[in-house]
Structures are given as structure tokens and as C-alpha cells.
Amino acid sequence: MVKNEQVHYNRTPLNSEEMALSRVGLKLYELLFKPYTFKQWNKTPAELGPSVLARIPVRNNSDNRYFSDKFQALPKNGYTELVNNMLNSPQITIRLNIDYFDIRKSIKCGKHILLDQLTDITQKGLAALEYRSLSFERKVIKKVDYFQPASVVNHPNPKDNFTRIVEYKWFPNQQHLSNDTVIFIERSTDDGEPYYPVPNKRNQDLYKRYKAFANNSL
Image (cartoon, rainbow, N blue to C red; front, top):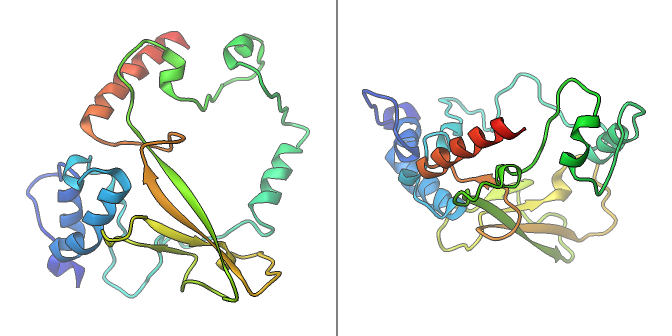
């Protein structure tokens, strides 16, 4: 049982290595979480804040779901229809190719939610915040109903140069027009769109400085 393997600290875990050891123990940490975390972040768990591996679901039962919420669901007709319905709502106005800072004073609403990088907002010349991105390699597997046993399979083995494979054919509401299947191989990288801020002390301290500038300028 996992609880027999857990490492117990007399304080709150200081980093993701300690967090993982406190939740799953040394054996699973070395086998799964340490190599996978390094591939994902290009840093060891000891170099990352405890929040990264605090997300590990720990159960002493046979429930193999990632989430244990009582109610779990997907949109009945898929996310594409969900998003289209939102965008087609008469209560939503879409304006493209516009700089928010040029029009923000004319927007009549209670609160604004700006989805942008703090570095773009503040432009104060501080050091760059560190992010990780993903690259996706698409492959079509001919004459195979299913390539893998589930929609998402993680690959913690250090010998694999990717983190996981996603096979969308497993998801609900997919139309299968042939006996082939399509997979996407995911790799973590420093290049590309900034997806994940690196949760270490250096980045968190720098973020606070950017946030202070943003609060004063918005």
C-alpha cells in the first residue's frame, strides 16, 4: 500500500521531490515521477516548487481515475459545439486585430480579464520569465483500430524522448471513417508558445516583481 511507502516529514515539503516522497514513497518516485518530471520541466523535482507534484492523486484503493470528483462529464456534443455556441451568443462581441490597451477605456463592463503575458503588459525590461512549451508530432497508424489502451498514455521512461501520446479516437463523439487511427506525440520544450510557467523560486520571485508593475500600470 502507498501509505507504507510514504516518507514522513515533520514540516511541509519544501520542493516537489519531498512532496512526491511524502505522497508515494521512494520506489514510485524513482520509477515514475522523477524521470517524467525531468522530461516535462528539464529540471529535477528537487529544483521545482512543491505544487508540481502535490497534484499526484494518492489513494489506497482500486480507483484508477485521475480525478475522484463524484460527477465528471464532457460536453454532450463535444467542445467544438460548446465553443461555437459561446461565440455565437448575442451577449458576446468578437473584435479581432485590436490592441486591448487602445480600447480598454471604452469597454463598458465591470471587470476586465486580460489573458496575456506579464512581460507584454509591463514592458519594464526585467529578466524573462521562464516557461515551458509543447511540440506535437502527428502520426497516422494504418489499419489499426487502436494504437494504445487509453486516450492518453504517459511515458516516464528516460529512453523515450517524449512525455506522452494522445489518441483522440478514444474520446467520445468521434467519427471513425476508416480502420486507421491518429496519434499525437507530445514533447516538452523551451521553444514555442509559453504554456507552463516554471514553478521554481527564481521564477516565482520574478513573477511578483512583474505583478507589482502590472498592478500599478493597469
